Image 1 (cartoon, rainbow, N blue to C red):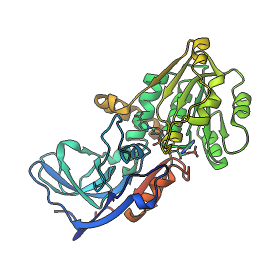
Image 2 (image 1 turned 180 degrees about the vertical axis):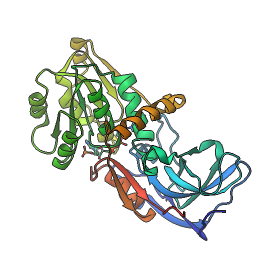
Image 3 (image 1 turned 30 degrees about the horizontal axis):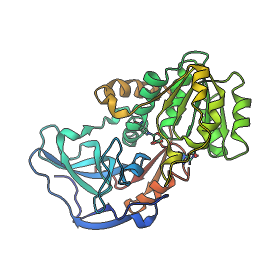
Length: 340
Ligand code: NDP
């Protein structure tokens, strides 16, 4: 049986945020370490992921996913070590990933876990480039945005977990790629990993910068943010352009959706398409995405960064940072060390 502590720290949703979440919305409690039942596995968290979609779960509103109830444990993508297994596919010390909890330990059905292959890269990558964000980038680019050689592709939140991979895949397909991000350091990194140009939206007028960097307009826009940045891209859309709507993080903390000049007339002019998508629609095709992504990573064609915050106690702060743009690449929290 693997390494096990006496108590389990876990974060609960203490209250629903109004606007920007604050520390008041989170509460840490200590309980006994849970015991796995039939077909279940006890997992000790090594890394947990914080993701923008969690803001939606904190809200009591209809969405594509059920909201968390106040008082419920917060859930997260986790890479962890098996402590005890009542499932034939897993044994103690296996490294696994699944949708578990903001906690030191969690129990779940064995069928909801996947083994992490350490030969594919660092185990933490299973929450980033070789996990949900990478798979989102892969299908969002290859199946929805579909860049072709010579296209100009613009990506927002380009230095994030999804955006950074989108831009590099689009570059591999022969497109010219322009990223938008919120810091000079992010711009430098993007230009070093194959983006043809990048814009710091915090440094001057983004519309002017886009006009300068996209003199032939925009054929594909991969939208992670919505709001004013998307407004700035819109006038540059070319005839037959495609907009892949992946996320709208600029609006996740809005208490009311802003209205303003309507931009849809542009689609009449361009005969363009706007398509939203969800990574969970590709559940049956993860293997295909992970095979391609791990080959690209191994060959150095797709590079990635992780920003690791130390300690479960700092998980809310790491989550809040997603709305401040404080990190480059995938935001993770290191909760425990491997026992072996
Ligand atoms: P990121 O790693 O990109 O982190 C979020 C980033 O968004 C921040 O670092 C910040 O970077 C930027 N940002 C935050 N607030 C704003 C704002 N108000 N205006 C502009 N930029 C902002 O997150 P992910 O890569 O995990 O997710 C990116 C998007 O993809 C999110 O919208 C998410 O909800 C969506 N998503 C959708 C999925 C799907 O199935 N459709 C699956 C996974 C993610 P910066 O410095 O650039 O401001």
